Image (tube, rainbow, N blue to C red; front, side, top):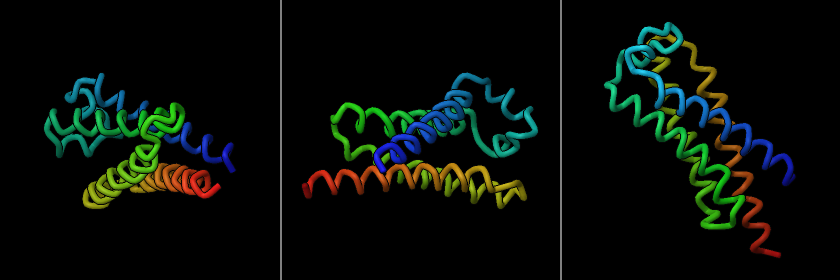
Length: 127
């Protein structure tokens, strides 16, 4: 189960860090010009950057606390936070009549990784 937990954490961390990093390094005007990023037209430059920063922070939060043992409770919190962020993304995509499956999948992945890590932490405390 630990290998599955780490695999989910790493997969989610890579997906969120890549997506968030892209939002941070790509000019908002270029994002808005991309048909796959239609949602960006509804957000200010600062909001797009904040979303990207939240995704990168959440991605790091899925790995670093659990890997280092420093504040490991932040890993489940990162998973829940990313799932909530993706809940907002689902709402926006549905409002815009865009596909909502990608944020549903990413949110579920992040939530599963966080909850599995929380379960492992509880198990470790009980032993």
